[in-house]
Each structure stands twice: as C-alpha cells, then as structure tokens.
Length: 276
Image 1 (cartoon, one colour):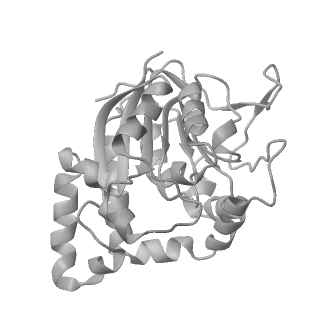
Image 2: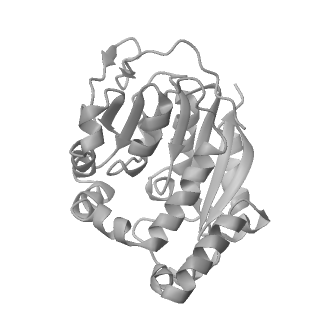
C-alpha cells in the first residue's frame, strides 16, 4: 500500500501560471482554463474533440473497456489509502470516466486535466460534476502542468502518455506536482504485447517496453512499487462480445493483472511513489 503523505487539506487548488511562479490563481469548481501558448490546431486535441461526441457511448456498451477500466481502477485502490482526505490530479481525464469514481473516495479536491476542450465539456455536463464541490476541470497540457510543486497526494494517467509529444517530460511533470511520498500511477502501451502485433499503426501512438517505462519513471524520481497489466490475453475488443468467451476472459484478465504476465499486457501500468 502506498501511503500518500496527507497534510492539511484545502478546498482550493492553486494553479501556477506558466513562466509566472509567483502568480497563483484559484480554480473554481468545473472551471475550464486555457494556459498561455496552448496550440489550438494540435492534431491530438482536434482528434479527441471529434471523438468526444460518442466517446462514452462506445465504452459504456463494451465489455472490453469495462474489463480494462476495472484493472485501471484496481491499480488506484489497491495502492492508495483514502482513509484521510487525498488531493488528486488525473492527467488526461477525457470525459471524466474516472473522476466520478475517485471523487467519491478522495474527500478532497479532485482535478481533471485534459488537452481537449470538447472532452472537458462532456465531463462538466455530467450530473456528478455539477453536484460535487470537490471537482475541478482544467484545460492544459501533460508536458506543462499548470500546478505548483508538491500539490497532490495522488497523480495518475490512463491512455494518455502514449499520445503526448514528450513522454519523459510529461512523467517528470506528474512527479513534480506530486507530494513527497505521494502516489503516481502511469500507464504505457507495451511494445512487447499481443496488442502491439495486432495494432501495427496507431494515431500519434508511442509504445514502450516495460524496461523503458520503468526507466522513465525512475528517471523522474519515482520508485515503482507494483506493476499491473490489462489486455494480456484479449487479442481484440470484439472477442469480449462473444457470449461464451466474455466471462472467461474477464475472470482471466483480472486474475493475472498483477502477476509477472503483466509484462506481456497491452496496457502496462506502474504504481509508483515519489522519492523526494
């Protein structure tokens, strides 16, 4: 269990403007902020703006995505104690699929950051987002997080790092804004997986070996505590829709997610702790 170091909890989260360390701004609930220099024509942003229209629909209907998201949630709740209030940052929150889940347990401020304004609009329109005062949504880049050093007890990111321009810089930023001994959970796309063989090409997608992923984490001042894997035996998402296979695949994926077989998984998840 990674014990996040929790100090006095505040209701506000403060943003440090790029290049202006002494300037602080309070983030109101569900505010969409656009940092200086954010490229409005970026390919990734435009792609996810388009996908935001039916992003949740496909995932809500798909057993495949429910299996993957269950393992991702497992990597959070098996490694972070929510006994005390925990300040949280999700990098690449998209439509807020994990924000709802984590905000129920955090008992403190939960910030979701995404590069796509359209994704954030979908997240802000969800019922939980309007009734929970501890949720804030921020428009920003993973490689230049607009937060002060040591702001969060838990920082995590799923399905985002493979799509950022500079993965090393993004992981470094996540480590920077985490508190000392705070939890940082990172997800990479595994180049040694069956998933990589099936998906020969991907939109602006980067693949890392497990060894490379660990080096990136350790280079950012993180200690890898546990490793998880998702999509280890599932060759393609459509296979999960086959009635006689779906139950078996779900059970098998969950049972081997935290074993050595994680090194062969399509989604390679590192549960880390900040050293300093």
